[in-house]
Image (cartoon, rainbow, N blue to C red; front, side, top):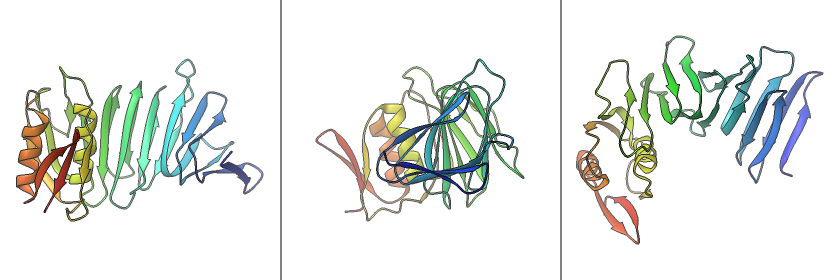
Length: 226
């Protein structure tokens, strides 16, 4: 067992996952899977507010009315009876929320943010203060929420860091993409694609945009400057 609970006060609890992914019960209807190197802090008598550093998956029983609010960096994720994953591993760069079931609100104190439903991914760019979102890995549908109303056929990147875009592409096309060390992970992309474009076509446009190139080796796509 690599998760440890420390009572910082009579009601405040800190949970750490040091080496392995661990599971823990937070409240009567809320469970968490905490990934290696991650930490949460919460107070049992608070308004079910949880502070997260790192990455965690939260499972909330939809049969009850009580949800939770997760604070990750400067963002908040309010669940509406659901299962969702928050990745704040690079909270100084961007924060990503992936909804497996149900619905969440993803916002900050000053920005209204976006509403994410089942099988959608949303990202907050800490540097540009922008939210983007995209439907995930459905061969016949891709959705995006960017504050306007694009066609459900589109996949749009607006000031999206390369590392974030690659994560979205891996999930949408069910492929593995490796970024070599000589490629800037946080190069910003402003490109859009239709639903029918292949991953090869998308990678061709993206790499051309950042003056890089791609190749496929042993079933893995590699982005490099070499």
